[in-house]
Each structure stands twice: as structure tokens, then as C-alpha cells.
Amino acid sequence: MTDMTIFPQLEIPHTIAAGPGPGNTDERVLARFAKAGVADHMHPDVLRGMVECKQMLRAVMGTDNVHTYGVAGTGWSGLDVMFSAVMPGDKVVMFVNGTFSGLDGLTVRMKAATAEELATNPLDPAAASVTIVNVPHGASVTGDIVEAALAEHKPKWAAMAHWETGSGRVNDMRGFSDACERHGVMGLVDAVSSLGVGDFRIDDYPGVHGWASCPQKGICCLPLTYAPVSFTDQYIDVLKQTGCRTFVHHPILEARHWGIIDGADAPVGTYHRTHSAYAVSAFHEALRIALQQGIAARARDYIYHEAALRAAVEAMGCEVTSNMPSLVVLNLPGEFAGREKELVQACRAENFGIWPTLSEPVQVRIGILNLLNATAISDIVNRFAAALRKMGAEVDQARIDAVLDQHYGQAIAAE
Ligand SMILES: *Cc1c(COP(=O)(O)O)cnc(C)c1O
Image 1 (tube, rainbow, N blue to C red):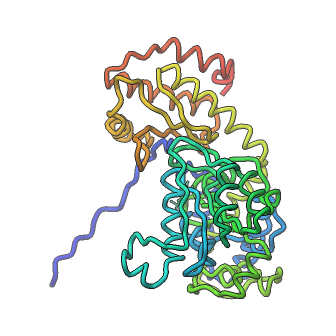
Image 2: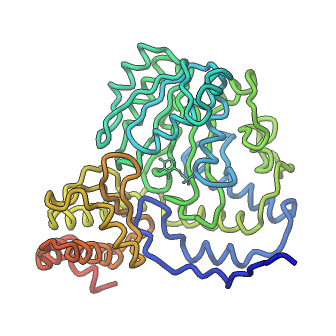
């Protein structure tokens, strides 16, 4: 008999997930996940749930695109579906201003590389047909940058992150979409961290033909469910001509189970892969919550609470370099520069989950996904202040209290 270890049941503590993502999944979502019955992926209520999800997702994304649905998995799964239309040798201009758009760039280089280019450096290929436009960390991609690059290169595709979560920067969607339209370029957007947080309708950006988001950030549905995607008819037509080299992540085939067949809504879906009743129920509830709260109202809440967090960390002497409403990216006070990872580790050891940046330069990231109330923000602020103090910083509690008090007034007492 071989030795076998059966480990004790896995216990995972409850933490304050105050990072750039994942956000705190709503109790209602977890309840739907746990309460779904054991039903197979072709059960009528599962199929109906998927069709309802598709329709609610169109409202959340603000689109009439027929090809709007969820891709099983994480943000990268949705992005992989979106980028699967990029074929070897396709000309692409990719705008990179941080970790995530950098990884989108890697995805694009892997897809657009020729067989020789891929074999030369399989994990990080260079592709002659891909132009990466690097914008410095801490700066946004502007319409002028996009315009100049598209005018020069005239690519088939252009890609950008809507909000670059690595550096906490909002990029210029209007400028990107307009430049794509002017130059007849098909825009592809990583909206992983903006969907469900910002107030926008994707149909207002006609230069963009593919969108991909994720379950775990603004949609607040971490029980690994669905990464929202949406494609215009033009994207689908181009894909029909070229095809793409994937079955499971094929933008047309993956749509079938959601009842999108031959470019139109069908009453129910047909088999593509085995979807889970639990995942469908959870995603369905997350979309219901987003629509009940309202996209615009939620976006206002993020702006309101980010301002409080920003003012409070500035009162501690930190410098904020981000402009994203769900996330504050900051430099520590000068004398503590270089100790960001130590601070983050100390916070995480106390189940206060904040993050450093994942690529250079090292900064601290504090997020507020689904933490939209004065009590939660004050808790984050006070924990961060305590961690700074432990490192030896002199943090004036009265100043912080004054900032929070000015921002929230009696809100804290009322909660
Ligand atoms: C979080 C994030 C991703 C990756 O999403 P996963 O859910 O981890 O797969 C990609 N792009 C951006 C902009 C992100 O913020």
C-alpha cells in the first residue's frame, strides 16, 4: 500500500479583501451558489438561467450586441476568447501602461506570432506584426497616443485596457474608440476592472468591436463563474472569414450554450460544454444585484468612497498616483520608500488583504470593491494607519478622523 495523506478539511479565513480584486462576493451570490440543486447543464432551468443572464448582461454592459455572454473561468478566460480572433501575422497595435495590459500584450504576441516566431521564444514571443506602444506606469493612454500610433501603423486590430489595474489608471476610451473608427481599425478592450464599477455603455464606443471583463471585480461573483464578453456583428463577420484555432474559446461556438445560434437569439442554448447550475445561479444573482443597485448609482458610490480613502491616505503623507474609482495606488511617505512589500505583508498577516504593484515600480494598492460604506472604508483607513505606525511612522489619528468625519459626517454613526 502506498502512503496516502488525507488532509484535514480546508479552512479558509474570512479576510478584508481590500485589493484591486477579487472583490467581496455578496452573501446573496454565495447563497444562490450553495442553494442550487444538483441539475445537469441541459436542465431547462439552467438553460433558462443562462438566457436570462445573457439578457441581464446586455443591460449591465449597455449593448445590443447579440454576441454578449459569459465565458467560464476568470478574466483571462474572457480575454482569451476576445483575442482568439487575432491570427498569426495579423497586424496589431497594443497600448501598454501596466501589468495587465502588459499581459494582454503577451497574449496578443502569442496569438499573432508566426510558428517560427513562437518557436524562437515560446513563453514570450516577439511578433513582427505586433507593435507594443509603452506608456509609462502611472500615466494614462491618451487619445493622441492612440491616434498617432494607428495613423502610423494602420493595423487590423488595436487593443488597450480600459482601466489598467496595475497602475490604477483610467485610459481614454473615447479617444481610443474615435481613433479606431477614423482608421478603420477594430478595437479590442480589456474591461476587466471597469465593468460594474464605472458608468459606461459599450455601445457608445463604436470603434470597439470586442470587450472582455471578469467575474471577480465589479461583478462581485468570485465563486468562479463567468467572464462577460461582447462582440459586434463586424467582429463576428471577420472571425467567420478567418476562423480561429480553438474550440472551447471560440467566440461563436462558446455563445451557443447561451442561446446565441447563427447570429441570433434562440429560445434555449445547445451543448458547448458542461456548465454548472451553481455557477449559473451565482452569476444570475450577481447580475440581478448589479441591476437592482443600478450601474450609475454604483459608479457614484465608488467615486464617493474612493475620495474618502484617497484623502485619508494623503493625510498620512502618502502620494496617490492612480485615478481609478475602485482602487488607490500610492507611494509611501519618502522615509518608508522601499518598504512597501514589508508593509503589505504585515497587513496580509492580519487578514487585511492589500497588494503591492506586480511590476515595477513598487507601490501599494488598496481597493474598495464591494466595500462601499463608511464603516468599511474607515476600517481600511484605520488598519492601514496602524500598519504604518508599526513600521515607525508618525500618523496623526486626529487628522485622519477629521478627514473621515468631514467626508462622511454622521454617516458612520448612522451605520
Ligand atoms: C484582474 C485583471 C485581469 C485578470 O483577471 P483574472 O480574473 O485574474 O483572470 C486582466 N486585466 C485586468 C485589467 C485586470 O484588472
